Length: 194
Image 1: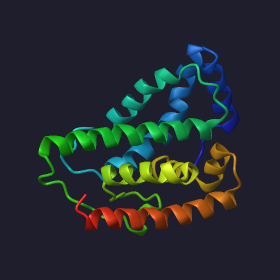
Image 2: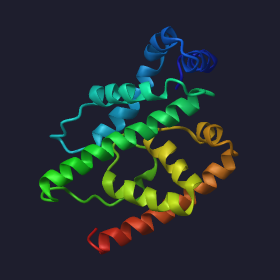
Image 3: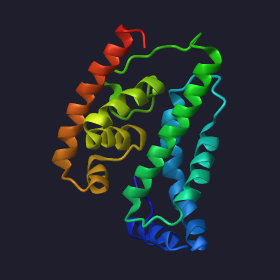
């Protein structure tokens, strides 16, 4: 999955975090492909007339990353975790804006089933998923982060464990429990017409 040395990406992230702008210039082409694949996965599940395109989503992530310039980056997994969080917020903001413009008309409700596993065609209603993730975070922040990193970031179990500083077994346990909780919560929202 990674064509460039993880150590090289980590080195550049740390240099960028200390203010070396040239490190960001070197880093961008190294991580672009992976960010593009993640963005493409999410955009594939959006409505056909979605105004935000894959490249625009990545550009928006880069624009928001400017605010993270002085972060003490630890590794590539942390970076992709932050990018996953940014993509989630950007897509949810667009979905909320679209929903508000349409006042709900024509917006298909797509239930989240076992497809929480990262796939090439995510079908979950992002606003409902975001609301459910916020509710889960209030109860168990780590389980919410596991879903965010794996579903939105496309991180592996091992990468998620590295970001969260827990074992892969803990990530898998949290993943299973969070999926069950989210399915129940999204089912409740569906039944209540939320």
